[in-house]
Image (cartoon, rainbow, N blue to C red):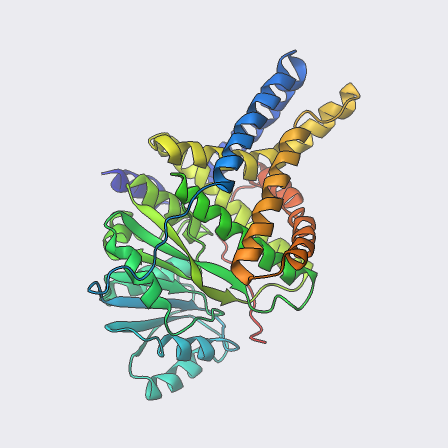
Length: 428
């Protein structure tokens, strides 16, 4: 079975050095391909040909007709276990626990893993257990391995749910969330469902407004990627996974810093589909400073890029729309920002415009359309206000270029040390 071979190679020992070699080789390939495109006479034609492919795919996404899902099976009501891994979350944990225990669904159990917190998280959870009998708490000792993945793996054998829901400690949800989610699992091919993420403090500053626009764009793209036969992706907070699918994939990978992105690949490689749900959304706290954003997005970029390095030999087994979608978005999201450095250098040397500039412009045009339509759909915003928010959002998205350039260079040079750095939640 595919999951067994993946588990043996990537879970039984630390693959950090192997990733560094792969990252260095990948960087050399990208730089070499850019140099070749600048050197050969057909280089510009190749770029324009790839641009046509991206343009056609963009049209397919824009005009995709979505199939409606949601509460479609009134007689399907499997047991559900909701999990939260909490480390130093005293500012937000009580609010989330109270919301989880008020969800209108049965049978339901709520598990919170106190991951060796050094603040009042453990004390707050003990107090809540006295008034909330459905709350169960697992306390992890200091120096436990695996970060969030390790916490979730440790509590998983104690749970009984057929559907496993995972929330971050800063999540805010509605009481009817499961009534909308569970119906999708009546479809036997659905291995996981991802809720739309929303930023509840989006009015704070430019960065939080940009994150809100980004989340709306992401859900719009994901829905349509699934709609044209591509892949849906998990986003960590507000994800639901079928237990049988999770066990088939070997549970959560403790040797990655982005467990959700890693699990996404494992599910698709084992033949499962991931659905995305517009409503209800899971709200979370957006970071409010540039240093916080830089560290968070570096982690996301590294984890997202790392999974391609880890599972590259297996990804070729995907067929049809999933394979095409996966590699095209890999090109747009990871390769193009990385290739911007050699492309600019070669362009300066040759005294001409960067060769990949049409692909970059096309990618930002697709992002602009997806963000505008995503904001309109998610927040019911008037078109003129959505247009303004989209313009700000596109400026905000420019941070991804230096993030990816930094991450790919660092991964190719420095051996990776597994270090799980949590985002500090204020709870305001």
